[in-house]
Length: 474
Image 1: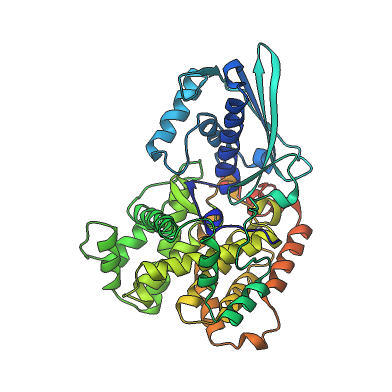
Image 2: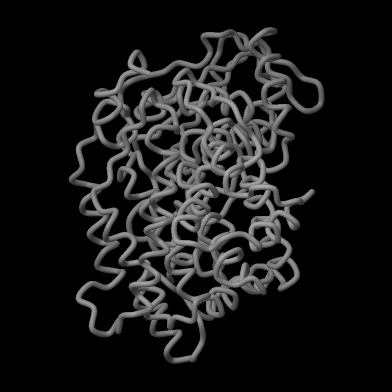
């Protein structure tokens, strides 16, 4: 049976700046505490030690891994925690050197409780170990790996258990893109239709629509916040937010008071090529500036690449189709999620494993395919668009300056979004049956490239821009 990865696994609501270095460790800490409760060990707990390994250690400070660990241990939920509470909880722990659990229990947590280890664990470059003590005796030791996109696995899990594999008989089991294409052609359905029929095995139509709308509303809110917030990003690089200034120039004197009116205001503006480029860039930058400031974003498929999909979907809504409503948004997200899942199953969506091609490249492919469906493309053209977008991201490295998800990460979302739109247009003018490269070919190539890539270019900040442009230069 093929693995089933839901669209809601690929599009998760969480807190920035990184799905693998923030959301994953956060969820791992939550899961460990939950296990302690289930086994009645939490009552005995009086000390905690956390070890971070490999990429989590090398870029953990810049990616707020330590902050995420504190929040996860505190049992905060990244989907729903008020963003303003993040600083309050972290400051309280650092000041009082105690973790507070639900129910009132407190455990000492001195400033040296999280240790950054440069060595890599064998299974994955994003490893972490949680140790619990009672009266000096170690009573719990669990090792987790954050494998990209907020997915976590434990040390003893089998590879095929990286994601939840349900025992249900899905009507359309999908592992490779060619299977998806064949289903669509045989059933005369769009990709989003196939995906929706699979999702119905897990949720009702009402639940699917509710959750997809929540995903979109989070994306829209994120863009809105990013376009209306000025200043500099935290972390020490003093990177200036750019979406605000760009937005002021583009929106001009249009009047609006909420997100829906904002969309209407944008639709009434100019549609010259340069303005379109600027709008798409503005949308993408806005999301990743919010992400860099530890705001709430949708992992799509990662936090570092969270701006591509909302920017391309917003482009469709404000430029291509002013009559578009939730039905088009739903199709876009379903199609994008399925394309991302095929990359996840056959390659990686973790920059620590595959460089930035695994994040921006995958998000661009997801967006390109989804846009192609909305523009009337066949299933084969949708997959061709995804192939084109990834093909022109192959080999892209991950070398963030200062270990922060800022430079070059934020701009790359803008570039990924523009490439996605361009890839869709190329695919729509192409007979996919005449193409030399299929999406499955490029996914395999991306994975081979990932394995060949030097570790310095896999989210370690030990190569590329990260060493040629140091913090002191900024």
